[in-house]
Amino acid sequence: MRWILAVAAVILVASAHANDVGQIKTVKGAVHVERDGKRIEAAAGMGVRQSDVLTTGADGAVGVTFLDNSMLSLGPASTLAIDHYSFDSTTHEGRFDASLKKGTLAGVSGRMVKQSPESMRVRTPASVMAVRGTEFAVRVD
Amino acid sequence: MVVVLPAADGHTGAVVVERDGQRTVLDQTYAATRSGRKVPVNQAEVRRTFAPALGAIPSRPARFELYFETATDQLTEESKLELARMLVELKRRPTPDILVIGHTDTVGQGDENDVLSRMRAERVKADLVAIGIAEERIRASGRGEREPIIRTADGVDEPRNRRVEINVR
Image (cartoon, rainbow over all chains, first blue to last red):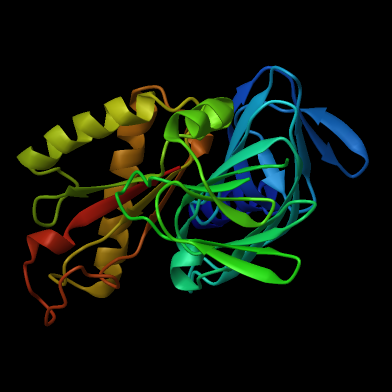
């Protein structure tokens, strides 16, 4: 019986976060997550999912850590869409596509890029950048 | 504008910027493109432009290892100190995600080692809960003798394999 309960508890914890591909770790000022047509106020500890759009206000900043330990953060008046995120924690293979629509972004690549260089891509309205394992910053001009 | 920043681990990788079919490789610290073209940038300007974004980068994911006395869930003396250091580091993170994985050496039966590895992980989890980290932020599991750091024959007392690894995001 104890085992059944233990297994059930593990499944509950897992399913609560099954769609999360990352987690908001830092929030400053106004930060929102757009998900399924809703606009949710962001808080530290909140999960981030594929297709989420993160926005910061004029005084806002936000930092997210993803499943492969990559990190992205936004400065003020910025918009970032998480277009695609997949990561296999066993093989470390995956693909990360994000689009910076406006504002500033800083990033640190993670395990996925160590496994397959250029698997992390950040688009801006005019260009695409592929990350080969580094820390970087992008501003939409 | 795209800029390569100095990496915290000292290793500078590269970014490839593609614009209008043109690929530009940035593989040096503070290498940058503007409108797809390589341009010199000054460090102070980059710091200023990206200060709020850089300030919002989360604490870096960290990994710790704690070692145990043979056949017990008692930490070695050295690992008690490491545990104290780890707790200080964890306290700095308001919303940590913690994965605790227990391991054993190959002394004893495989199924006993499954239980022992779980006990070790649970013991560390209890220490984390005791300092005030929310239980739901910690996942603990045991891998028995399946993932040794040092490969050994069966029945070998190997201190480096009697461990718990803690991954913190």
